[in-house]
Length: 568
Ligand code: NOJ
Image (cartoon, rainbow, N blue to C red; front, side):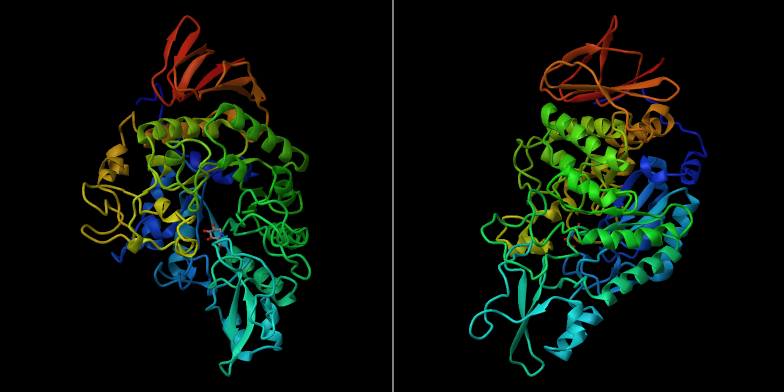
């Protein structure tokens, strides 16, 4: 595969210039680092902060604007760090607070911003507040910072309501009283090791405002807010009644999620963010039923961005993609927030594997599908995404075209949802396999030579490493580098949300983006399985596969995207 012609050069001071820009987040490309799986400096098989620090130049050279780090806080790792025991401490597995400070400073020196993950819906069951609550027993005010309730039934043997955990099974676990007798139940929308905070409690609110300030003072540029739609529950915790299993995407209105009361919290947080210099941002992980509900989280006095999960969940089909693009832009315009775009993250099957499989299988897929087809589509999908107005999220390893690892043995899996739901869901380990940097043997530079990696890496990943792809113009890594450089340099690819759809053959998407100065970028995407002929306006800037041209026309191979530039 080739992506000609491209230029990988960009002005030497481009990252620094980007870092200085006002409203930097409106069109930022934000790269998600999953710390366990990015780079391991000490050879224990788990990635860590010094490892990330050493690899920051890769991210600068890739051409992203910011790095979002999944949680690295003190945690027993019942849910890979999304169970936080101390929000102000770094888990020794990842390093120290000093390492975090150095990482933030180095990133800033390279022109990269740092966004950290904040997990306010629940803590770890090892968090001091939860441990105190257990020790104190029923009736203690210290229990009011979580949702403790007596059970139903004669002896309180039934859960307080019918809510289910997103990971499967009931959302309640019964405690033992300090004297050992069966006690109250507590709510956990995720694993039992993740008790939900009670956000009506003023101490919970005050504590999180203090945590925000703790990290803002250390220089972070923003927060990705985990389960941002879950903090406030409907008063009285009413039963769900008849319903489909709780899922993060595709669940309609429920008493557990997307309650209007959450917005008051984000208004308070926005004031805190705005009180620090340099446009610090909040990004909502809010799985709402519609893009319009998502827009509530990014009203001018709330958060800055929200993930676009409707886009992530779209199949590789022209009609559904165009619909979700239009709906996303339409939803965000009234609140003047940038639309975001995302194809992969640490919770879903990588898009190279989703697109390798038939549509309709959802985001937890167990089959590798047609790998070559998946990669072709993934490359085209990237050019489509990066041409859209707004901000884009990349997940580590997608720049290498990594597929999901679908054949991990049960013994190595760690995703708690895999074990709780009878394997029906929870295939998240497949996208969390440590990424290959160099060499021909595992761990491919992820850690010291001959060292372990917490999930095994497939043998064929040698040819997908950063080293193997660097300098190869046909590689996915060079496609990303070139596309990101063009995106940064081309005036039509700014934050301005103009997008004009053009007539196109069935299964083809074509649109123009136009800069205020008249410079135009056209993106054409062939989502069909056969070549199509399209008008070739101006110069071919980049393509995900070889495009042939003749007399004002171009032939786009199957599942291929191209960008064209013109002036005027
Ligand atoms: C969303 C996170 O992305 C996911 O990894 C985690 O399991 C849940 N929230 C619970 O924190």
